[in-house]
Image (cartoon, rainbow, N blue to C red):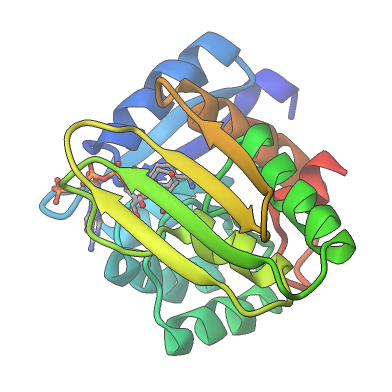
Length: 225
Ligand SMILES: NC(=O)C1=CN([C@@H]2O[C@H](COP(=O)(O)OP(=O)(O)OC[C@H]3O[C@@H](n4cnc5c(N)ncnc54)[C@H](OP(=O)(O)O)[C@@H]3O)[C@@H](O)[C@H]2O)C=CC1
Ligand SMILES: O=C(O)C1=N[C@H](C(=O)O)C[C@H](O)C1
Protein backbone atom coordinates (compact mmCIF):
# COMPACT_ATOMS: atom_id res chain seq x y z
CA UNK A 1 0.00 0.00 0.00
CA UNK A 2 1.56 3.32 -1.01
CA UNK A 3 1.45 6.19 1.43
CA UNK A 4 -1.25 8.04 -0.52
CA UNK A 5 -3.58 5.05 -0.41
CA UNK A 6 -4.14 4.90 3.30
CA UNK A 7 -7.83 5.08 4.23
CA UNK A 8 -8.69 6.98 7.40
CA UNK A 9 -11.94 7.70 9.21
CA UNK A 10 -13.19 10.52 11.42
CA UNK A 11 -15.44 10.01 14.44
CA UNK A 12 -16.98 13.42 15.10
CA UNK A 13 -16.66 14.54 11.50
CA UNK A 14 -19.32 17.28 11.60
CA UNK A 15 -17.76 19.01 14.60
CA UNK A 16 -15.36 21.95 14.72
CA UNK A 17 -12.32 19.67 14.73
CA UNK A 18 -13.84 17.16 12.31
CA UNK A 19 -14.32 19.88 9.70
CA UNK A 20 -10.78 21.21 10.14
CA UNK A 21 -9.38 17.69 9.87
CA UNK A 22 -11.22 17.00 6.62
CA UNK A 23 -9.49 20.02 5.04
CA UNK A 24 -6.09 19.15 6.48
CA UNK A 25 -6.28 15.51 5.30
CA UNK A 26 -7.02 16.70 1.75
CA UNK A 27 -4.19 19.24 1.80
CA UNK A 28 -1.65 16.84 3.30
CA UNK A 29 -2.36 14.12 0.72
CA UNK A 30 -1.01 11.14 2.67
CA UNK A 31 -4.43 9.77 3.58
CA UNK A 32 -7.87 9.72 2.07
CA UNK A 33 -11.09 9.92 4.03
CA UNK A 34 -12.92 6.62 3.61
CA UNK A 35 -15.63 6.98 6.28
CA UNK A 36 -16.96 9.59 8.66
CA UNK A 37 -19.41 9.48 11.54
CA UNK A 38 -21.32 11.82 13.89
CA UNK A 39 -23.98 11.21 16.52
CA UNK A 40 -26.81 10.78 14.08
CA UNK A 41 -25.08 9.63 10.92
CA UNK A 42 -26.04 6.54 8.94
CA UNK A 43 -22.47 5.24 9.01
CA UNK A 44 -22.27 2.56 11.70
CA UNK A 45 -19.24 2.12 13.95
CA UNK A 46 -18.69 -1.22 12.25
CA UNK A 47 -18.51 0.41 8.80
CA UNK A 48 -16.22 3.15 10.10
CA UNK A 49 -13.80 0.58 11.57
CA UNK A 50 -13.91 -1.74 8.57
CA UNK A 51 -13.21 1.04 6.09
CA UNK A 52 -10.35 2.82 7.85
CA UNK A 53 -6.84 1.85 8.82
CA UNK A 54 -6.67 4.70 11.33
CA UNK A 55 -9.54 6.66 12.89
CA UNK A 56 -9.28 10.23 14.14
CA UNK A 57 -11.61 10.59 17.11
CA UNK A 58 -12.71 14.11 18.06
CA UNK A 59 -16.16 13.33 19.42
CA UNK A 60 -17.21 12.94 23.07
CA UNK A 61 -16.13 10.54 25.85
CA UNK A 62 -19.21 8.37 25.19
CA UNK A 63 -18.44 8.44 21.46
CA UNK A 64 -14.83 7.39 22.05
CA UNK A 65 -15.70 4.49 24.36
CA UNK A 66 -18.26 3.13 21.88
CA UNK A 67 -15.68 3.48 19.10
CA UNK A 68 -12.99 1.57 21.03
CA UNK A 69 -15.39 -1.31 21.70
CA UNK A 70 -15.63 -1.69 17.93
CA UNK A 71 -12.04 -0.96 16.87
CA UNK A 72 -10.69 -3.95 18.81
CA UNK A 73 -12.73 -6.26 16.55
CA UNK A 74 -11.03 -4.83 13.45
CA UNK A 75 -7.53 -3.84 14.72
CA UNK A 76 -8.19 -0.29 13.56
CA UNK A 77 -5.68 2.18 15.02
CA UNK A 78 -7.00 5.27 16.77
CA UNK A 79 -5.83 8.84 17.40
CA UNK A 80 -7.97 10.03 20.31
CA UNK A 81 -8.21 13.81 20.48
CA UNK A 82 -11.39 13.82 22.55
CA UNK A 83 -11.12 15.13 26.12
CA UNK A 84 -13.27 14.98 29.26
CA UNK A 85 -12.75 11.33 30.24
CA UNK A 86 -13.31 10.33 33.87
CA UNK A 87 -10.83 8.07 35.71
CA UNK A 88 -12.74 4.90 34.84
CA UNK A 89 -12.83 5.83 31.15
CA UNK A 90 -9.09 6.64 31.20
CA UNK A 91 -8.41 3.15 32.59
CA UNK A 92 -10.49 1.72 29.76
CA UNK A 93 -8.38 3.62 27.19
CA UNK A 94 -5.23 2.15 28.73
CA UNK A 95 -6.72 -1.34 28.71
CA UNK A 96 -7.75 -1.05 25.06
CA UNK A 97 -4.26 0.20 24.11
CA UNK A 98 -2.93 -3.25 25.00
CA UNK A 99 -5.08 -4.76 22.24
CA UNK A 100 -4.92 -2.00 19.61
CA UNK A 101 -2.45 0.75 18.74
CA UNK A 102 -3.97 3.89 20.32
CA UNK A 103 -2.52 7.37 20.78
CA UNK A 104 -4.27 9.66 23.26
CA UNK A 105 -3.54 13.33 22.65
CA UNK A 106 -5.63 15.83 24.62
CA UNK A 107 -3.68 18.45 22.67
CA UNK A 108 -2.08 17.52 19.35
CA UNK A 109 0.03 20.68 18.94
CA UNK A 110 3.80 20.76 19.24
CA UNK A 111 3.41 23.94 21.30
CA UNK A 112 1.33 22.36 24.05
CA UNK A 113 3.64 19.35 24.14
CA UNK A 114 6.59 21.73 24.59
CA UNK A 115 4.69 23.72 27.23
CA UNK A 116 4.15 20.56 29.32
CA UNK A 117 7.84 19.62 29.10
CA UNK A 118 9.00 23.18 29.89
CA UNK A 119 6.67 23.33 32.92
CA UNK A 120 8.18 20.11 34.22
CA UNK A 121 11.72 21.43 33.78
CA UNK A 122 10.96 24.74 35.53
CA UNK A 123 9.12 23.25 38.49
CA UNK A 124 12.09 21.01 39.20
CA UNK A 125 14.26 24.12 39.74
CA UNK A 126 11.83 26.20 41.82
CA UNK A 127 11.44 25.81 45.59
CA UNK A 128 8.12 24.43 46.86
CA UNK A 129 7.23 27.90 48.25
CA UNK A 130 6.22 29.01 44.72
CA UNK A 131 2.42 28.83 44.31
CA UNK A 132 1.53 27.13 41.05
CA UNK A 133 -1.59 27.30 38.93
CA UNK A 134 -2.61 26.06 35.48
CA UNK A 135 -5.02 28.32 33.62
CA UNK A 136 -7.04 27.24 30.61
CA UNK A 137 -9.17 29.56 28.50
CA UNK A 138 -11.66 28.16 25.97
CA UNK A 139 -14.84 29.13 24.14
CA UNK A 140 -18.08 29.05 26.11
CA UNK A 141 -19.39 25.87 24.42
CA UNK A 142 -16.52 23.68 25.64
CA UNK A 143 -18.01 20.94 27.80
CA UNK A 144 -15.10 19.81 30.00
CA UNK A 145 -13.15 21.70 32.67
CA UNK A 146 -10.28 21.72 33.37
CA UNK A 147 -9.28 21.08 29.76
CA UNK A 148 -7.61 17.85 28.71
CA UNK A 149 -4.42 19.82 28.08
CA UNK A 150 -4.48 21.32 31.58
CA UNK A 151 -4.81 17.82 33.04
CA UNK A 152 -1.99 16.54 30.82
CA UNK A 153 0.30 19.37 32.04
CA UNK A 154 -0.85 18.65 35.58
CA UNK A 155 0.51 15.12 35.32
CA UNK A 156 3.96 16.53 34.54
CA UNK A 157 4.04 18.68 37.68
CA UNK A 158 4.67 16.90 40.95
CA UNK A 159 4.02 19.82 43.31
CA UNK A 160 0.54 20.75 44.59
CA UNK A 161 -1.12 23.20 42.18
CA UNK A 162 -4.46 24.79 41.36
CA UNK A 163 -6.53 24.87 38.20
CA UNK A 164 -8.21 28.02 36.95
CA UNK A 165 -10.69 27.77 34.10
CA UNK A 166 -12.29 30.41 31.90
CA UNK A 167 -15.09 29.47 29.50
CA UNK A 168 -16.08 32.57 27.54
CA UNK A 169 -16.36 33.99 24.06
CA UNK A 170 -14.73 32.23 21.13
CA UNK A 171 -11.25 31.44 22.45
CA UNK A 172 -9.94 28.41 20.54
CA UNK A 173 -7.51 27.40 23.23
CA UNK A 174 -5.01 28.98 25.58
CA UNK A 175 -3.01 27.46 28.45
CA UNK A 176 -0.79 29.17 30.98
CA UNK A 177 1.33 27.64 33.70
CA UNK A 178 2.11 30.21 36.40
CA UNK A 179 4.58 30.05 39.25
CA UNK A 180 4.26 32.77 41.90
CA UNK A 181 7.19 33.44 44.23
CA UNK A 182 7.66 36.10 46.93
CA UNK A 183 8.75 38.90 44.58
CA UNK A 184 8.94 37.14 41.23
CA UNK A 185 6.64 35.26 38.86
CA UNK A 186 7.08 32.97 35.89
CA UNK A 187 4.37 32.46 33.27
CA UNK A 188 4.61 29.94 30.45
CA UNK A 189 1.92 30.39 27.84
CA UNK A 190 0.62 28.67 24.68
CA UNK A 191 -2.26 29.91 22.54
CA UNK A 192 -3.70 28.76 19.23
CA UNK A 193 -5.38 31.23 16.91
CA UNK A 194 -6.98 28.60 14.65
CA UNK A 195 -7.71 24.85 14.83
CA UNK A 196 -5.16 24.16 12.07
CA UNK A 197 -2.30 23.27 14.47
CA UNK A 198 -4.54 20.64 16.12
CA UNK A 199 -5.34 19.05 12.74
CA UNK A 200 -1.71 19.10 11.55
CA UNK A 201 -0.56 17.54 14.81
CA UNK A 202 -3.22 14.82 14.55
CA UNK A 203 -2.05 13.96 11.02
CA UNK A 204 1.56 13.83 12.18
CA UNK A 205 0.50 11.50 14.99
CA UNK A 206 -1.38 9.25 12.56
CA UNK A 207 1.69 8.90 10.30
CA UNK A 208 3.72 7.98 13.39
CA UNK A 209 1.14 5.45 14.62
CA UNK A 210 1.00 3.65 11.27
CA UNK A 211 4.12 1.65 12.09
CA UNK A 212 3.37 1.08 15.77
CA UNK A 213 1.89 -1.97 17.44
CA UNK A 214 -0.40 -2.15 20.46
CA UNK A 215 1.24 -1.84 23.87
CA UNK A 216 0.99 1.25 26.01
CA UNK A 217 -1.26 4.22 25.42
CA UNK A 218 0.93 6.45 23.21
CA UNK A 219 1.13 10.25 23.58
CA UNK A 220 2.31 13.27 21.56
CA UNK A 221 5.57 13.18 23.51
CA UNK A 222 6.22 9.80 21.86
CA UNK A 223 5.66 11.47 18.47
CA UNK A 224 7.69 14.64 18.98
CA UNK A 225 10.62 13.40 21.11
N1 LIG B 1 -6.75 16.97 21.05
C1 LIG B 1 -6.85 18.20 20.62
O1 LIG B 1 -5.85 18.82 20.24
C2 LIG B 1 -8.19 18.82 20.59
C3 LIG B 1 -9.23 18.19 21.22
N2 LIG B 1 -10.49 18.67 21.15
C4 LIG B 1 -11.53 17.85 21.75
O2 LIG B 1 -12.21 17.16 20.69
C5 LIG B 1 -13.57 16.97 21.04
C6 LIG B 1 -14.45 17.57 19.95
O3 LIG B 1 -14.23 18.96 19.91
P1 LIG B 1 -15.04 19.88 18.88
O4 LIG B 1 -14.82 19.44 17.48
O5 LIG B 1 -14.71 21.28 19.26
O6 LIG B 1 -16.55 19.55 19.32
P2 LIG B 1 -17.90 19.71 18.49
O7 LIG B 1 -19.00 19.72 19.51
O8 LIG B 1 -17.80 20.83 17.53
O9 LIG B 1 -17.99 18.35 17.66
C7 LIG B 1 -18.19 17.11 18.24
C8 LIG B 1 -18.41 16.09 17.14
O10 LIG B 1 -18.51 14.80 17.74
C9 LIG B 1 -19.72 14.18 17.34
N3 LIG B 1 -20.18 13.31 18.42
C10 LIG B 1 -20.54 13.63 19.68
N4 LIG B 1 -20.89 12.51 20.37
C11 LIG B 1 -20.75 11.47 19.51
C12 LIG B 1 -20.96 10.08 19.60
N5 LIG B 1 -21.43 9.51 20.73
N6 LIG B 1 -20.68 9.31 18.52
C13 LIG B 1 -20.23 9.86 17.36
N7 LIG B 1 -20.03 11.18 17.21
C14 LIG B 1 -20.28 11.98 18.27
C15 LIG B 1 -20.68 15.34 17.05
O11 LIG B 1 -21.72 14.92 16.21
P3 LIG B 1 -23.19 15.64 16.27
O12 LIG B 1 -22.92 17.06 15.94
O13 LIG B 1 -23.98 14.89 15.26
O14 LIG B 1 -23.66 15.44 17.69
C16 LIG B 1 -19.70 16.29 16.35
O15 LIG B 1 -19.48 15.88 15.03
C17 LIG B 1 -13.74 17.60 22.42
O16 LIG B 1 -13.60 16.60 23.39
C18 LIG B 1 -12.59 18.59 22.51
O17 LIG B 1 -12.19 18.85 23.82
C19 LIG B 1 -10.76 19.82 20.47
C20 LIG B 1 -9.76 20.51 19.85
C21 LIG B 1 -8.40 20.07 19.86
O1 LIG C 1 -12.38 21.69 23.27
C1 LIG C 1 -11.48 22.33 22.69
O2 LIG C 1 -11.74 23.22 21.88
C2 LIG C 1 -10.08 21.98 23.00
N1 LIG C 1 -9.85 20.93 23.73
C3 LIG C 1 -8.59 20.40 24.10
C4 LIG C 1 -8.43 20.34 25.59
O3 LIG C 1 -9.40 20.04 26.30
O4 LIG C 1 -7.33 20.60 26.09
C5 LIG C 1 -7.44 21.03 23.36
C6 LIG C 1 -7.62 22.46 22.99
O5 LIG C 1 -7.20 23.31 23.97
C7 LIG C 1 -9.00 22.79 22.43
